[in-house]
Amino acid sequence: MPAPKPTNLLDRTFDEGVALTQEVRNYIAYHEQADRREFELSQCLHLGYQHTRVSARLIQVMTWLLAMKALLSGEISPEQFTAPQYALTDSDECSSDKGEGDENVPAGLRDLLTRSHALYDRIKRLDNMVRTKLDAGEVPNFGMLSAAPNVTSIH
Image 1 (tube, rainbow, N blue to C red):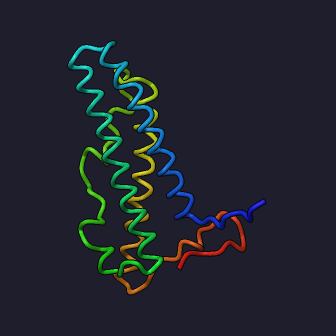
Image 2 (tube, one colour):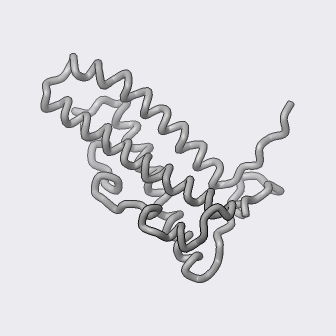
């Protein structure tokens, strides 16, 4: 049996983001066709907008997580990490919770909206903490935020 993979906050969050991205892809692939048959054009457009919001959040999150992994592994410098291309977009589409309580949006999509919003908000808080550390000349250590003791950290 292989040894358990050391996990830390960054690894767990990355794995969560990948799993949610796959779930969204599967949801949209299946439900988009069904929605076209069931709903009027205006409702389909509204649902398409909500699909786009979930996707935009996950693109932002996964880009940030990959950049953070690259920073911690030394593949990019702190200066590169703080470039605009890796910054989270603070747009209404990503930061707003619109759609999560909309009864006209199917329950499965509302759940994806809620979960992607929560993940985006967590990454936004992490981004603020990381940028504060980088501005102070420090490199973040996500190993200190591990769930289990004696877990190897990423440096």
